[in-house]
Image 1 (cartoon, helix red, strand yellow):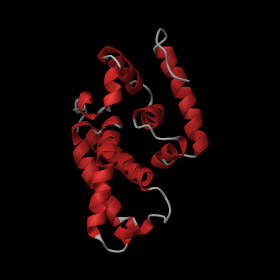
Image 2: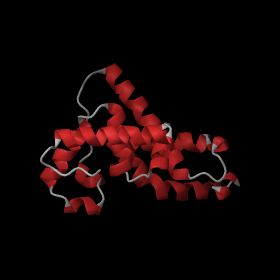
Image 3: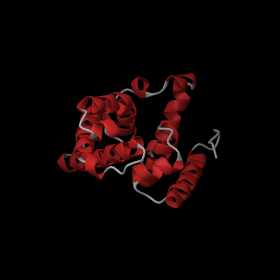
Amino acid sequence: MARVRGGESAAYGELVVLHAQVAKRTAVFLGAGADADDVVQESFVKAYRALGSFRTGAAFRPWLLRIVANETRNVLRSRSRRSHREELAAPLDVVLDPAEHAVSLERRRELLEAVRSLPETFRLVVTCRYLLDLDEQETAVVLGWPRGTVKSRLHRALGRLRDSLPDKEVQR
């Protein structure tokens, strides 16, 4: 970030390369679907324009992912205003980490369907914590919520998942 702020534009390209994959996964998991690439591109442009407001010493990733989350919400609102067509999602196998491939495809589909059926606030917190593997503080920054809100909503979301998947193990 110091190099970027110092006017070295190539350094921002390095940040883009470093964070593009997690930004795309965030956009997909938050519902951008086929618009994920556009969301990511717009988010990096907005982040670059807002570098002056980036707090020195803060972590770039949570700050960027908050922009991605906001841009995804903008796309979803815009999409719903235009029509109520179904979301076109990128194939999950393309965006999931290799570790996720160890989990059976059927089990993954059940779990993702259960997550998708959660109310938006619960879906967002579960997505950030478990699908994007952010810690509580990063999740709070990305979603713009106090850390206590992240904890309480995560607790309630996991309870709902346990109820919807009663014969399955859901992490506490």
